Amino acid sequence: MMRLGKEPVELPLSPLGHTWILDLDGTLVKHNGYKLDGEDSFLEGAEAFLASIPPKDMVVILTSRTEDVREQTEFFLREHGVRYDVIIYNAPYGERILVNDDKPSGLRMAVAVEKERDSGLWIQVIEDEERARVKNGG
Image 1 (cartoon, rainbow, N blue to C red):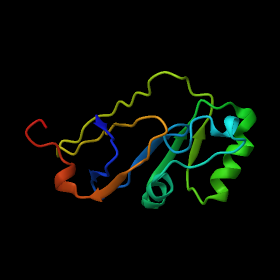
Image 2: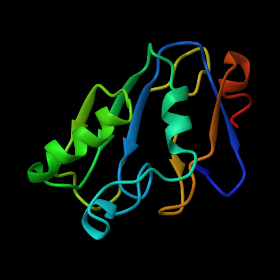
Image 3: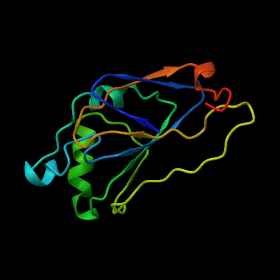
């Protein structure tokens, strides 16, 4: 697992299409900002990060928000030009677990990134198949 700090982190990925599974509150937007401030606001770097996701990629947004704020949430995302394929509401508050098989070529097929709640989102996607492969178990 990769842990984000305050400095940009390179995330080497293959040139294949990717599936991004992104938490909303505390990751992309201020946690509970829609309740506390009456509206959402992006965290530093989040809009640039979202805009950098290649068009061929699938974007899935997860949130513990309930369906009653769907219209408000999706209006905010549309208003800011955020491209996504699916939003899943009512996600449990606990850990988010991704399980995937590997490729015989050694390409890493599951990537986890964790960040401090409400901190900036500084991920620089680098398409580099060689760096994205698992070499010698690491």
